[in-house]
Length: 79
Image (cartoon, rainbow, N blue to C red):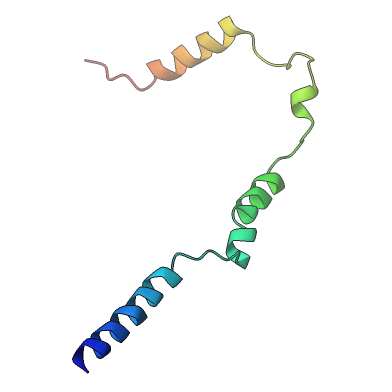
């Protein structure tokens, strides 16, 4: 009687353990990452910007370097 009870408990435990291994597609797995992609796409101002090969109007490298150096100099402490 005791062995039958232990065998039955063992079978039920094995059934419960192995039932967790079965995979079913859920709504979460179907939509995984879709909210991230949706948020990313809604923040892109111009999706075609990478195809535009014209140069950007603005400061040249030397002028930008000079402005950055002047900006950094303002924060140095004088002795």
